[in-house]
Image (cartoon, rainbow, N blue to C red; front, side, top):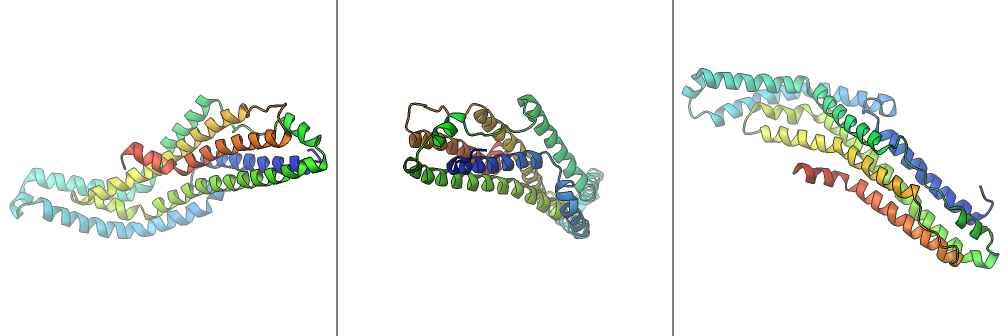
Length: 278
């Protein structure tokens, strides 16, 4: 690495960005049961199992409510076709609660397959590294003391922006995992609403929301791939411009691309929900 403080400051900021991007790439391909050694997942599964008892109790309540609201009289309940319909609904709702965790993990695995397909189709096993062009390094190193003073201010601002954006992005990805854990733990309660026809919309909305959280991973991967293409073709550096202008132009365009990526990652939830009509 160069001994120049300005160059070191920029390189350290870009290294932080690259590290967080690589961490995101690693996290997004993990399953919840493998994340951080699976310790959080084990706790959520334990809570899920505990709430299943409450889910079964609510299952009976929602089933009775559904029978009362959908049957005009007691005579309707005596009809064989109606009894069969109620029995099938109750059996399906009970199975959804009993095997809800397996159902949700199967849905997650399907989405993970989509994410892997996107990665392979894009040809990106790992995200591209964002590096400081050699032209800027050479120009900065050739600056005198007084010429480098404005560069310090420019690089401080630029490095701060890059570092903050990298942490915002990684926090968003961690937030997705937290929501996956929350959905897993609380699942038996909303899934119990499938027992009654008037309340089944709650369960449907829950599954749609869970699917949307899973699909956020695909949007995040697509965003990172697009940024990686930009990183592979860095902003054009004008060698004839003043050093401050050269560095400011490079940092400005780089931060703009990073802002677009971070904004897309932050809005991945909204993007998926709009696509799913939620």
